[in-house]
Image (cartoon, rainbow, N blue to C red; front, side):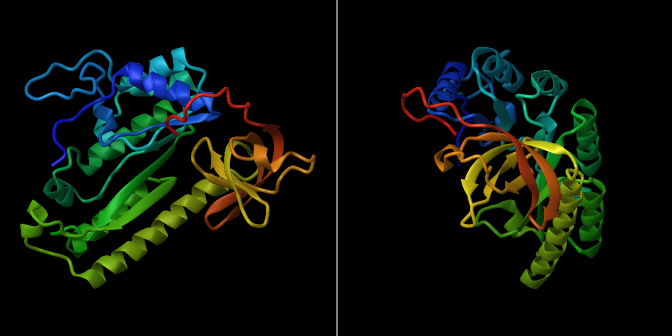
Length: 301
């Protein structure tokens, strides 16, 4: 068991951000087991029993990071859809362009019966409404999701409903997992267990649907510019990184003799020319190399 939820004190989070900036990091990713329930009043000590949430929840923490540090880019790794409230969307909209237009909202299934048996705190209609509110507040946002196939009781009809719903969301990306039994969980005792060949088939279909969705999203970048944080160099010399909406981008290195040591951490404006199976291809138009580290220990990435 994970035990009671615990939140880092805001001062500890800010210190981690400052340490990361001091050694040259330009993007911060806020992450946690259940980051949407962040409560700066709990601190690292954790809590057992009844508790009234403090005023410093996730939106307040993001405000403090934006106000009290020079971070250039900030994103949230993954957040439960029911925790995306108006306050968080307001902070995210106001913080642009430093707050990045990308949210990962776990879905798990598009069938309401399966969602109920999973113990999720939303149904498909709730999820669709949340995605709608996100897009209304953040018009250029890329919404990513994940889904599990083969959860017990997912019969052919439930699977078809789930697939249709996922296709209707017009996602920018989708992670697909096959259900696997974990000893001691309620799901292992459910009737309607799904056999492995069926799980594999459904996963393949959903992976193809995710690839189609990713390709559609990527195609919309062609002819536009993108701000990309470069993270690695391929053996053929191309630079690879993520755009603000988390689209993977690769580009030939600049021709003006930029030191390859300045690749990692460079942010460039790119002109996107084409779409490859797993990324978009572009040309560097304007390059901002990373600032020299100011020293200090390495912090959060």
